[in-house]
Image 1 (cartoon, helix red, strand yellow):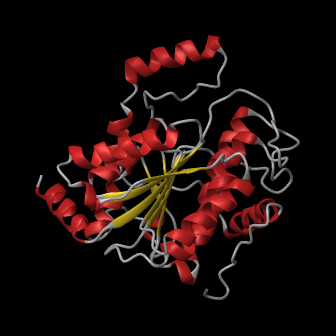
Image 2: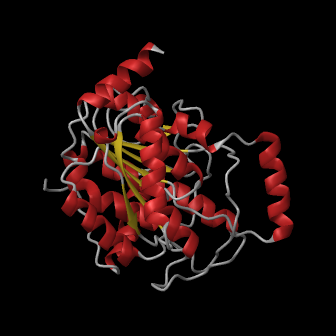
Length: 326
């Protein structure tokens, strides 16, 4: 289409860089490939294993070439990071900022689907909440210096792909902020989604981040390897349902990258909830604008910001409260 052609041409004229966390499989891998095909240099972040770095870079280079771009247009790289560890996230993010003074997009997809109870990481935080929220909050906060330096026409994009517009509020954010007392699969899911809304809305409203587009999106039902960690008696029905009604990771990726490509050539197409002039965007699975929960209040924002500050602080990650510009 004309829009797609225009966007691609404009991207090619000014090299852009995207960091994709969770880029080794599923939605993250598909988004990395799609961005590479559209001329972005991709920093793929994920768990390491033998041969993975070469395999990821080779795949991304093929994605670039398949879109009839020459190899010089984009340089891709793989950065190992186990997002269960906030220490590793801190180290990985510091390396990215050191090597790349400008980042145009950060996309975070790391996650897991389990029915386990509170399961501590080596740092004592819940595994699921760490992948779905703590590690994402940390990556976003730590990469801000390079994101602020982006020169994309519509501004850089920070996207956390989880449950935007789909989750319920987590009401115990004060009495059980880290889900150590009343853990359940539903509380863990709602907690991560609700915290994402609140935390990224606060980041988006800080004066030093005004030019950055923060988006909490929902991927919908995708036929990926989601649920790998589930017991066999649940995994089989999930796989069956995915075959029946799940969209492919590449179809999902085409929706998820839409606001990034829009910002690469002009203005974002999303509208903020309540049509506010600043703050978080919520994006539905089809790239339309979504809504916040009814419990999205200033009080909840400040409470969750403090909780995030405490958890990230234990790993030596400081949150800038936005009272002074860096």
